[in-house]
Image (tube, rainbow, N blue to C red; front, side, top):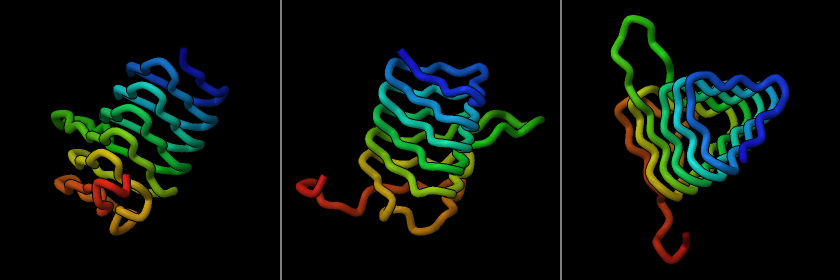
Length: 122
């Protein structure tokens, strides 16, 4: 039920039905839930992505750090990331976060980002 484009890499990961992984994307040691889209040249490592997350081009989520205990990066349901974003290991992105909710192109490891929209705007 997943579509993995030629040139994409998926290693030691779990992909739910409906996941689309585009060319050049790399997914390592991650859990990607239903209907997520991982765009070109995105890298996802040691992360859990909830349903319907859209990861834009050249986004880097999490990291595998040799010699260290794994730190999981979590991304909530219905998140849309801006292109080129870096989310460090340990960061948490809440549900329904969109491109304009990110304060910069770097999300630090202990940051928690949540939507700035009101409930009736979602």
